[in-house]
Structure formats: structure tokens, C-alpha cells
Amino acid sequence: MNADAELPEAESSEDETLARHTRMAEVLGGERRMGWADWKDMSIYESTCLTADGQRVSLWAVDVLQRVLKDDFLSRVEDWQKRMQEKNPDVKLEMHPIFSLGFWPANDVPWVYANLIRLAANIQLFILENKSHPNKVRDVVKALHDNLEPISWVSALLQLEVAGLGRKAGWQVQFEPQYLTGKKSDVRLTNGPTHLLVETTLMRRSVQERKALAFFDRLAWHLDQLGWQYDVRISGSLKGASSENAEAVVQWLQAIEEVARATSHDGQVRLVPGPAEMHVEVFRPTEATVGEPWGVEGDPIETYPLNRLLTLLQDKNSQAEGSVTPVWVRLNETAGLWQCTRFQGMTLTQMLTFLTDFLQENFLSLFPNLAGVILSTGALWAGGAPLDALGERATYNGSIALRNSVPVDHCRETIIIPRPEVPNSDAEVFADWYIHEDTWLDWALNELGHPSFNALSQEPLTENGL
Image (cartoon, rainbow, N blue to C red; front, top):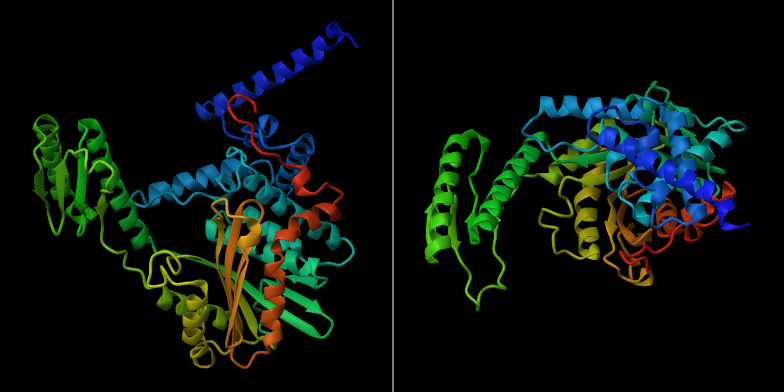
């Protein structure tokens, strides 16, 4: 075929690209609402990390989500986020997962496409299975559609996660099984005579804690801007900073700007005291100190993650009342149990020991209807570490701690703590599922007739195209 014959196809491709860019400019400019076509236009068609098969499967994944979540879902999410921001203007907006950097293709990296395809594959596999073995997956899909709260979405995603891992291992799955009391669990997994019931949930920071963090972040950002504007460094403490003394804080910031302007001219180091325990030092670094760290620190956030964990498990225990089979709780943790408490700096084995001792002594008295708890931080960036170096497993008193890789370039830490008298085999079942979690996506793709993920992704191109 000659070049002239190929020209119309090239022009068509250019026209399509221009049309996509025009549509996205209209969305970003507020001229029209975002739809599914725009959501995938952000990157999939021009992705630098997808192969041709990867583009095809990613578009298929978006089509699956659009079919089950309906055409107006994205605009409903935008409206919900706007209402939440108006309701709590002092709290940093909690982004809905559909627009998160770990899921939205606007963030054009392989990990995002792995997450997108994993969700679509889970939904599609259970919808197909539902035709011959009713599993109530449509109840989960309905929850994703109806309830826009991120905590509800995370719970539904965890339902699909646990159910998907169990299905790969050959277990029969039932969503939303009902107890004799009329209450429901999230997932029932059956393998011969063995039954596992699982409740899923998220433990996150309170509104007050998120308000305090947002206030600190705004102050720290403002001080950073002053430092850049006047070519100085500002270091010190924001302890005691609160929106309740906002007027005094504003006056203090004005004083800091005057000092920063003066120090910019004469290089003199100046201390600026503020309300409560706040104080900063404004200075210009010397050649000897230019590489030293600086910044501001705030109050330790008043988190009580252990108390919150007990309260959450007691709520799940009440929900499980009437169940013949004790219930496991699969819990994602973003309240600071790993990051912002005494556990920071502990090894995974030390965390396992502490949490096992803490929870097992409370199982019988506080939550006798629970079989155990599966705690995880969610996926963590692996920092480029070799995949074979990520794996870790530790055991203590029937409990199991795992660190395993998940696609792509991420890992997950999971701690599985059974009730003391529950057979250790149940914890081993979950541990086996999660330690092999990195193989789930390729298994699911194969089940659905798609190539493995390695055939769908590639290293992103550099600016020079290499």
C-alpha cells in the first residue's frame, strides 16, 4: 500500500486525537460534565505504558464499569464531592476512589491499569458465574452504584478482593449471606464442609483529626511560599495551631512575612514567637548549612487507633450476633495504626506480636462472635525493590504477618490474627491466598480470555521517545 493510500487513516487518527483533546478541554474548563468517554480519554488512547492489547483490555475494563455503574455515575460523584466540601470546608476533601491516583487512568502508570482491570475482572467473573451459580454479586455492584461514600466503596472493593482470591483457590462464593436474625455478612466462602464468613470495612481518621491535619498543611504550605518568595528558610513549631485561634495565627503570619522580607535583605537570623507554643526561626543558610534539613512540626495528631480498632470490632461483633459460624473481619487501615503511632519503626514481626497479644486477650470478652481480624495498610509503593526481596512471613501464637508483592511495583503488609480457640487452618487459608495475590490478575485475565498483564503493559516512554 502506498503512502497516499495510508493518508486518510492518518488524518482520521489525528482528527480523533484532536476531538478527544477538545472534549477534555471542555470538561476541565467547566463547559460540560465529565462522562465515561472523558474519564478514559485522559490517558488510555494515548498511554505510553500500554501495548495495543493493553489499550484494548483497559477500554474493555472501563466499559464493564460503565455498564454496572451507569452513565451518570461520574457526574453523581462530582456532585457528591461538592456537597461534602460545602459540608466540611475545613476538612481536606476525601477523593472518591474512582478519581484517585491509584485508579483513574489520568495517572498513566501500569499500577493504575492493573487496579482498573482487576476491579473490572472481578465484577465480570462473578457476573458470569452468577448465571449458573447465583452469588448475589449484583448486591455488591448496587452498593458501588448507590452509596458514594468512599468508606462504602472500599468495603465493596474488599468484598470483591476476598471473594476473588477465594474463587481462584476453588472456593464457592456467596455475597451478602443472611443470618437467622436477618442481619447479613459481606462474603461467605465454602469449600466442602468448611465455611468462612467475612465482614469488610475501613478504619480511618476522625473528622476532627482530618480538620487538624488540613489546618496544619495549610499553615505549612503558607510558610513554604513565604520562604520561596523571600529566598529564606523558615523552621520551627506549629504546636497549638488551631482554627479556633485563626485571627491570632493570621497576625503571626503577617509578622513572619515582615521578618522574612528583612532577613532577605540583611541575612540576619530572627525568631518570631506566635500564639500558643508556635514559634519559627527565619534565616538564610550558609554554605556550610545549605544541605541541612529544615521545616515545621506540629502537634501529634490525637489518634487512639487501638481504641478505635476495639470499637470497630465490637460493632462488627454486634452485627455478627446470631451467626452460627464466627465471622472474620477484613479491615483496611488508614487511621494511623501503621504510620503515626508507636508502631512506627517497629518491624513487621514486632507489630504482629504486639497486635496479637493486644487483640487475643480481648476476643472472648469483647467480640465473641468474631473468628479473627485481617488487618492491612492497602497497597504500598515498593520503591523499586526487587519483587523477590519483598516477601516476608512471620508467625506468632497462631497469627500470621505477611509482606507480599502486588501488581505493579507495590506490596501489601497483612496481619492475620485469629481468636485463640479458632483452628489455625483458617488463618493459614487466608495467608495462602494473600501470599499468592500477585498471581491473581494473570489468572483472572486468562479466565476471561485476555493476555497476561505483562503483555498489556510496557515501560513508559521517555521524553525523547526511548
